[in-house]
Image (cartoon, rainbow, N blue to C red):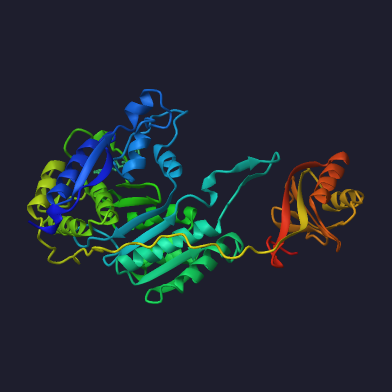
Length: 485
Ligand code: NAD
């Protein structure tokens, strides 16, 4: 008996989903079990039937218990019902169970699947909880709306460490970080700083940073220059779709959502309702999600065997309709027959494509390191945001200077981040949203100074829509300057 066959069964939770979901899940499970996956499967219902039963987030309350117990969720795509009132199941599961890392390998299969990038083989590790995805938005004036971008040190440490641990376990050679810290020096600057700090703990792995705009251009043009990429949520959301698309087929990619309490594995495509029930769908996306799952639960040897059989099947030209191409393909098959072809090739390796190699017994060290000493935080001022249509910066400054709040002096007024007082440029566009910065005139600047400013400004007829505290940390400025300040 092989080691694989005697492995202890790992409990996992499986959801068969909607549309093509049940067919591609059956095919996926059949392949990985034939390859030797030792799984103890619990099934839960999600998606359309649950939404239609009146549960707005598409999952039954009892299912959470299974997810918390197994901590591993293999999920087929679901159909999100049309119309309002329904919450995204993926977002609910991800957020509720704190799945902080999204991992998406994107490798081309040239010449078997047409692509402009025959040598591409990269993995995008996307931060999954922070950035602008808190969805914290406000409309503050007639003209201006805002969205809060939050980047935390622990959140950045976790995702960057995950990227390096993943690279080490999977024998990847380089980790590249994308940020826009030339503009967002504090938020993206923190992510970049954490990346530089953690990279030092992995001297055998090359570490590099690109500004996201040129980095994204390079990735779309020369993806073979990259290996593992790590980035904040929004850039990762956009670029992981670009990366999957340029391999030649979005339909083949899987992804993992990793958390401390539960991890979820899936295809990146949806439930393709028009293809449902016809034994047509390509199960490869969900199959790749399942490979990530096997690697995650310590069955990398099974993942490797199944992945190599899949590569061989693709090489042999046995293709589902979506990747079938006259000339390259040899046989057009259905979902079931494609799975059978892979099972028949278990134990074989590809002859032309690079064989898959999985970490066999690597354990990712994702333990949270103790936080460093707290910096000394000191309040040094406040930004008062004022709603004033057709305002004039000189008049606003004159009105605010008349408040005469002891300890506070008005130093700058900005409109959408650009200085408009003192010495504004007449060509700058003025919206109705004015940021008026008060700083300490040398003495203490405490909460009561802020309260007096808000009260005074409101009493003088200003519509104060928010305040933003200005702090230093160990003397280092914790806020941006207005452009031109
Ligand atoms: P889709 O990914 O389901 O389909 C897009 C196109 O790709 C269609 O032409 C489809 O036939 C084809 N396709 C997708 N997967 C395929 C496969 N495995 N084999 C062959 N062809 C495949 O996207 P959509 O049509 O925009 O969405 C359909 C439903 O899926 C919607 O209800 C959407 O909300 C849902 N959805 C779910 C998830 C998820 O559960 N993670 C993700 C995306 C979309």
